[in-house]
Image (cartoon, rainbow over all chains, first blue to last red; front, side, top):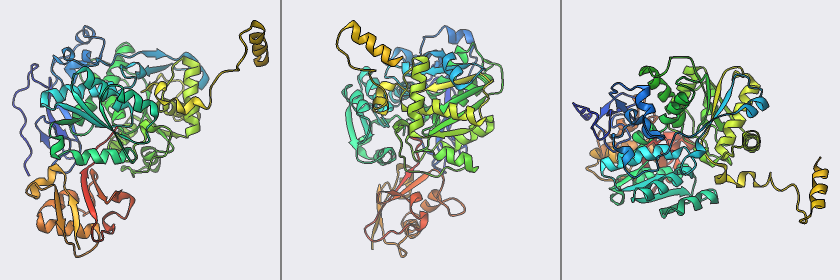
Length: 426
Length: 93
């Protein structure tokens, strides 16, 4: 079995920028850049490798206020920013003093609020990079298996890019995510089953002639797609003033986001863009889908699949293929992984909303509640500076909180009725 | 008896490009299916199983609609008419 040959020359004008090859994370086999995602030798996942030139803070700071300011560190051409795309990224890093006080964190707390992306989740980042790769590889239809956020992002990006899209979702997805995908005019296909079933179907569709020109952003474009998540790590470091935080809390679905934030930090260190200071990475899962947390607690290197049952549907991946790598990162950096119940998820959503005015989707509730649990258990140091990732907007998962919040009362339109109501609340 | 095996793109070099292969295993388990598959597609078994004969970490195999990791792994029963699907694990999300 032969592996493909590396391109001999990589220049800044290359279609994939400073990316030079694909490499198997398991056995190290190298392949040329293409629409491949699994190693022929061992089935391991392929990851983009680079030959970075010099990248300076000044170059980055002079770039657009989007992920494209980091183009030199992504598998994209220098013209990616000029092609039709949603220009995601450079979302707010919000100082969260009220939440810090509520949780007893004294070292400083920040929320990296990725609900500020064009379709209101971090998925716009990964899709933008995959969309660029699809263009370079001649794949004219954008597709994905999705728990909802990705569906939104693919459908919207394809609309902006005047590309066809086909989005496959589990049929029990939250109504809000169905509507906010279908609105972009995509071909939306609801599949009977859970996310893992949909993902499996996409795996089988690849290689079928009906999908010859399809780029499944999180399957055959996955090596490129996943690199988009590095930009969350880059932005945190840049927005903190070109330094790394001491602790980061990240939700785990597939495990890819957590591993890529770590990769982003390490690349910034290697390129001399930030000082090498110690950081700890913490993972957050829902008890109803916590295969990585269970493996972490049991001291295992492999992740045993589970059948998801949680309100945090965007994290409901029962068979997370990047789970082992997430475990590696958490253990290497001295972090840990927590899991919280559906009730705690709702509490987390409300706590963030009530203390900081940030309305997170269920995944954000998982992360806030896990942060609280890790502080209480002593696993996370409240005296160290901490960054929390909010990956999506609460407007997408209204069902999770609709039974828990509402009007203080319904009154007649009179001053006395308001006074009476407020008096009753006091 | 006959079992249908769906083969992913990256293994079709072993099956002359065929996406589906029918086999008639002597033993009605997934292990028996892979042994029978090896006869018609020599070399394919070692791509799916590691040196210890275990399912590789990044390979998912489904017997009918279920991931064999939820069933009995390589000992999962595969009666006549079963569909087996081999798919590279993808991280999802």
